[in-house]
Image (cartoon, rainbow, N blue to C red; front, side, top):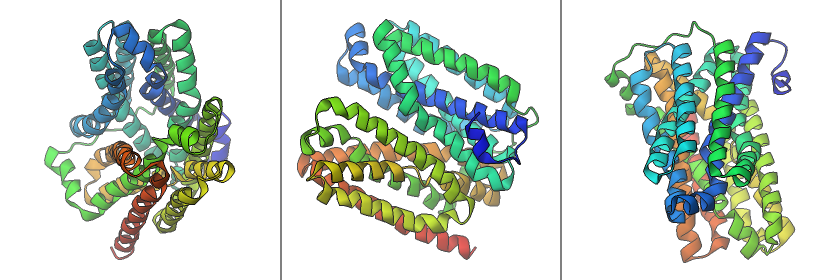
Length: 398
């Protein structure tokens, strides 16, 4: 695997194969979550529902991840990782098969919700495995690669699944994701270590980590940073077409370039996390704020506007590895048995940020105009920077 070479020679062949498997797993879960985005019209027509009801299959998935993942994690964290992950991927495959066979909206929604919860759970476990099985100096790089699988899904997996769905019917997209799930099942069965134990912990002990101010700060910073981006990104198509006056035929190409920039962002996040990630991010968020605010000035011309948008993609995920590991490390300090639960808080934070950013962006676009989405996002990024300054100060004085 090409990406494994980036990690260095210190990883064994088995470890590199495990990294490949975890990247594949996040690629598969990301594809499953968003593949339906390009098929909403087909789903709405076939099931005789409104386009907004079809859209709820996307938002419902995100809500199920945000709410269901930490709740389920509290109850299953005691079980050994190997059988737990295999059961999850089997449920994932079953959920996608049921989605493919669905002829009624309630059944499709139910299958999506169940699939969403196991996707969130598998992502949480994957991050924990990546953190626990790799050399300390490689944790940041490996976790960034695992995150990259999710980002690559939006660039490659989703367009491919959409193409399959458009050619053979929307149901075929779910057969496609079920097939990817089968490949992941085989790879997990081969590469996942069997000696990773669960941790016995009470509900009170796990939820107790939420009483610590440093955990609360570490939860809200990613939400604010991703919200800052999604204030703009949610409305990037109308910004391109109505503000920059770029022909519609170029929108998909620009979004592809944005996706490539976001992959680079994920890989850079691993390098940021290696040494003093919190210290660096204090200033990274300020840079993110400047980039977002620059839209107010650059959207008056196509080339500067496009450069700003691509820079937003380059900055979007720079925080993810640092704060995923920070949450897990904090849990290790306060309650080691709650480490997996703490890891589950990161996808919750990100999904919360996406929802909040989209909502704020909608209010801004409707009431004062698309031109103002950038500086509003910049304000959120500055708040993320402020909370990171506080987090870093608490870290240095602990």
